[in-house]
Image (cartoon, rainbow, N blue to C red; front, side, top):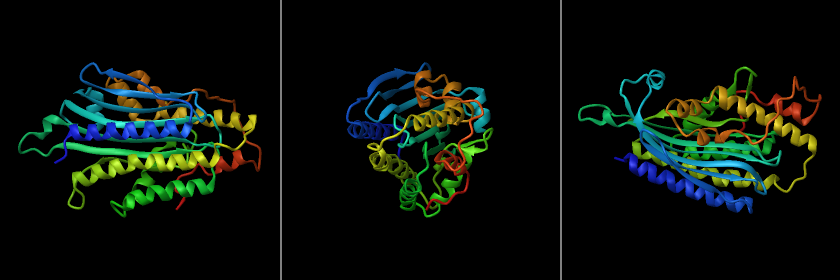
Length: 304
């Protein structure tokens, strides 16, 4: 049976692969790495890329932390054990180009080591997902993105894409705006082994999703990075970034978990954009691409 050390090691390898590829796509900026340790147990590698040809700010973070769970987390997870181990890779990229989308990905594993005692059912699960937040929604890009994710899912379970796509629509939803954060993607949590899927298969799915990031985002970036854009389009980009920030600070479970388990604040808030704007009561022009994008920030759109 796979163990936490193997999972953490393979996630580190995926972090390395993604960082090398993103540097190649950008062609200018390099990742800066900061290794850190968490008081209470474990640590991670924070890698940030900034001021590149395409990537204004981005992070590809790895962590493997352990220790005692705060009462608030135990209550929210509905578990009794005190100890935990969590490892994962988390990515957010904010491009400087309004026609290149924001992207987020996370693959993660959680277990409670004390639950592995003989005769007990271990408490462990995988989670993750990938979602896209275009500043301007391009139908062809949305179809490519979702078709790529469906292909990954279908290799493991024909029901995964439909199930996890709906989960993403519901999760990445800004309730106070009544709009989705972007065009969704897939999201899953507490995925455990069963009679149809072993722990090894779930882990392979997690890694396959992680390794889908580069071919997907490279294609989307290369489609648009040479296109010209206007100052008005960049202002719209800053406006859309503000919605991204609102979701991450108000609703995101990963942000809350990191803050409540005494995580490293710089790594947790790496997901926030470098520049965003909150224009008062902004209304797009009727018939504009901005208005069209807002009209497509809805749950349940079938992009495949």
